[in-house]
Length: 310
Image (cartoon, rainbow, N blue to C red; front, side, top):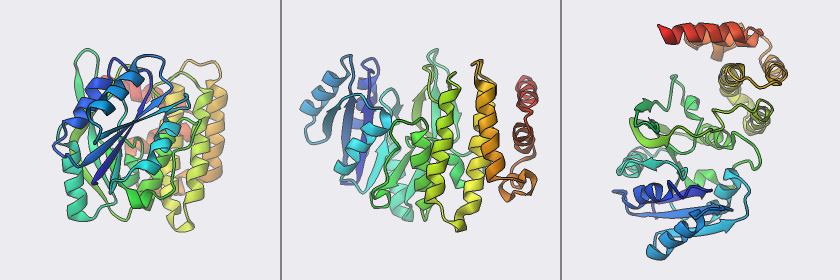
């Protein structure tokens, strides 16, 4: 078996068929699909069972009590028999040749991880490409597990953290750190449905503190020889992304949470301007990072708003 695809399913009866059909219609046919019903209260579980009945050699279903996306993925991982593993969210879909392209690249290069770009799809029909990497660094692709395939033997006993936000980021970051070779295909093969609230587009300030717990878990996986990689994650996902995301919220406790992020950043990187990862960033990104790091996140947001108008 070349590929195992794991799909956590929760209350997506409106979208599930489009998702599963895109997997069954792949040009790569040497694959198995795990639909993990995470305690759905709509018809999602029944739809998953129908697919398993119609395609018994390819589709397998698991039914769990609701425990979150990470737990759902973890339940299927021990059953995955493919040489590589992919993950798809049940309200998204993929291009017909996505997995053929990713597997072909993996087999030709011996890559442990292969990554493609996203296509963001909005409810009004608008679409735009979202590159997997915004910087020239493999770890900049750590945000999602869905636009990737991972060598199964390299996953080993690694699992998604359960009960935490940003569990996707943890899994992808650790796998990219473990990978001896990562390949990128700059084509938008994974279609990400925009419009619903997601972890990255939320107004729950305090729950964002899960990112710091995720960073602690990642730090345990990193040896001293990969310290610069960890610094890269801190300045990008704590200093830049998390503080900027919180600054855009209107939650009443956001200032307190931002201070917690800033304390963490100061602890891990006491001298920002001396940090090699910071110095390697573009000037525009360094400006926003510098302002966020020094408690001037509102000034950073003003600069970003002006930039977006230009």
